[in-house]
Image (spheres, rainbow, N blue to C red):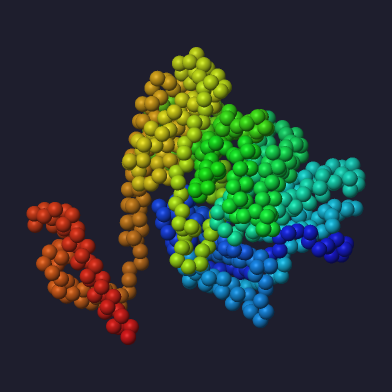
Length: 625
């Protein structure tokens, strides 16, 4: 339609990029080839979202279609987007050859794709940006993907399309009812669609500039996270209002200030911060600012805006994941900061509701988790009486709806710098720092303390129990961190503990500390019970595997006899402990029999096993020759 109506025009955008893409199978999850989570410090696995490998003038995308437990599709969408000015399209080079040239430039990316194979032809494009003169006309309307396109980065096309459909739907219904298709009726749609494409052009073009240097990208990426926070919370505000009122008219708020458009661009504070940060990046590109000056300017603008939640590490350049994870407890922190501690130009317009819904969601999750494990219900196991609202009980009993709601992980954007050479996986050698903890509520700020003093028990989870529960967070974290294997497991345990306390309808506030301690310790026990149960299931599954062939059995027996003969060449204690283990005697039992320490026995076993591995490796090399 745009071509037939003569609407196409030269794209008025700074972004100039091209694409090479295909679908593949056998792409390694990046976590299998990257440094461990203890080294890179990211809170979630890279393979659970859309992974971006970024380098000067371009970026890879890796989108597995089976990134959640119920997924069965083995395909993985992969591609490269390249800045045309830095990486012009070469002549006489196929799309496949050029793709692998870029893969081989970066060792970490090459490891991820070492076994990958394409299952559809490679596609290489010229400039991907296009534009139309307008979006609406006499009895026609272009959806965003037919009108304009910027770049796949940030999935902007999807966001603008959803916004446009929301604005178009009710207008089109009214136009049909009144038989009035005047283009003025659809002027709002035209204005905001074009405005959001201009915003995403600024966002993406400055991102390609920021790819020049990790520290510059580190700063610019934080601008995007803040605009995303306020853009999504605007939609959450409307959803929370509808949940409370069930009045469809509340969705009209999405077309009123400051909620119009996307990414908070209708909010003058957000728009000013973004525009001035964009100007700093453009000044760097023009040579008017040094890299250090541009970075300092961006952090200065973020701090001055007052938009950054105090519970985020956005203003700390060393914090690699400033927004953290969006599980129950971090989400509750943001809501409470916005409602009680945010500046005046934020408070009242954003974060005005949702804490109660988050608490209910947590309790529903507890009910369904207990049901799936076939364990006693949460109140029976922790000794408290769950006197929740009837609506909450009904929702908790709706297992089919909850299963659909909780089974899939949301797709996230995960960005990392791809570095050529040896410094792969740890750009600039930085380590993630633990963010400082910030006080969430001051009782003097909202009179909450006086409310709780007047009541000896908590009458409503959302109204009076949260603040006192907050005070135990650090203590609970110290309590369970020593008992659980990872920080993430400990954080989940603390979140669940506090959610159960918040769901209690008549908890004696004088026993709150003891109650939280008891629940946290029982959850630690449940964690290891669940691990043991899973281990038993795995053992049963292993026993149920299809038996090997007769040829395999003969080869295994022959290899075992050969390996046992090699043990005779080991020295003293190493030989003894290996033979003991072959007979089923543990290293601890071996240490007791020979009157030595367990560590000495384990050390001898480790040395002996290493020598046998070397012998096997040399034997295999000889067979290969």
